Length: 250
Length: 216
Image 1: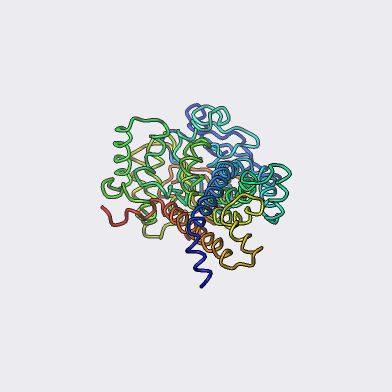
Image 2: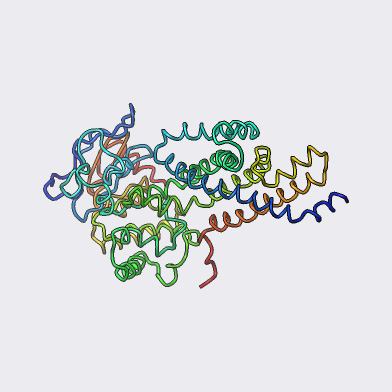
C-alpha cells in the first residue's frame, strides 16, 4: 500500500497482515516492505498499532492472518530464538538487567551465541564506543548507576552487540528529557549512517521521524494510512498526516 | 527468681532440647525448600497450576497445628516423622508464594528485553528471573522458618521432643520455670533465624546493585 514494489530485495515484508487480540482488531490489512539498509519510521498516535507491527517482526506476536517475512522467510518458519538473536530490539523502558554490569548487559547475546571470550570482550568495548561510552569508565557500572540517556545508549549497544542485520526500536528515546533526547537522536543518526543496517523505528514524534527516516509510514487505528519517503511526506494529502505536521508537539 | 534458677540448673537439657528443635526445623525446611521452590517456579510457567497449588498450600496453613499433628498420627504415627511432615506442610505456603511473587514481579520491560533478544525460557529463568527474585524467595524462607520454630514447640505434644517438652511439662506441673525454659530458647531461636536469614535476604536483594558505587 503506497510502498515501492521491491519485494524481491526487501528484508522485511508484511503481506496483508492482520492482528487481533481476542475480538479486538489491532492491525488490519498491512502490506509493507522494508529495504536493506533502509530506516523506516512508523509514526502514529498511541494505540495506532505501531508497536504491534514491530513485535510481529521478531515474533513476539504472531499474525492472526497474512504473513510477515524476514529475509525471505516467514517468521513462523524461523526458529523464534534464532530470529530474535538475529534482530536487535530496543524498547522505551530499555529493560537493562539490573543485576548485571554494563559490560555483562552488552555481552548478553554474544554470550548466548557462545562467542569465544576474547571476541566478546573486544566486541563489547567496540559497541560501547559506537554509542559514545568508554568501556573503561562505564563497563563495571550497574544500570542503577547510569543516567537515563546512558541507559538508553547501553540499550542500543546491547541490541547491536551480536551484529544483527536488523534493528527494531520502539520509542527508544521516549522517556528522555528533551535536551538529552535531541543529543542522542543526533548521535543515533550518525550511528545509523555508519552502520547501514535495516531499521524499523517507532515513534509518535514528528521531528524524530523526519530526522531519522528514509521512509515514514503513518499509522492510524491499526491501518497504515500512508507510507512515503521522508521528503515527500510533507506534501501528502492525508488528514492524519496534516494533523501530525500541524501540531508538531512532543 | 526460682524460674531463673531452674534455667541455670537445667542448662544441659535446654541445650539438648534446643538441638532437637533445630534439627526438626532444619529437616522440615530442607524438604519445604526443595519442594516449594520448584513448585513456585512451575506456577510461573503454568499459571493454570497456580490456583490449585496455592489453594492446597493455603488450606494447610489454616489448619490448627494441634489438629494437624493429631491428624498425621493416623498416617505417620507419633514422634519426629510426624512433626517433620507437619512443619513441612506449614512451611510450603510462604516459600511457594514468595517464589511465585518474586518471579512474576520482575520488571516486565526486563522480561520483554530478555525474550526479545532471544533467550530461551530456561535462560530467562536462570539468567534473569531467579537472580532478580532471590531476595523475595529468601524472605519466604525466613518467614517459613520463623513460623516453623514456633510451631515445633507444639510437636512435643506428639512426642517429637524439642523445646516444647519443657513447656508441656511446665503446664501440667504448673511450673513457670519449666515453661520459660522452653519458651525463652524457642523465642531466641526464632529471633536468630529471623536475623540470620534476614541478612541473607538483604544481601540478595541488594545483590550487586549499587555495590560498586565509588569503588573504582
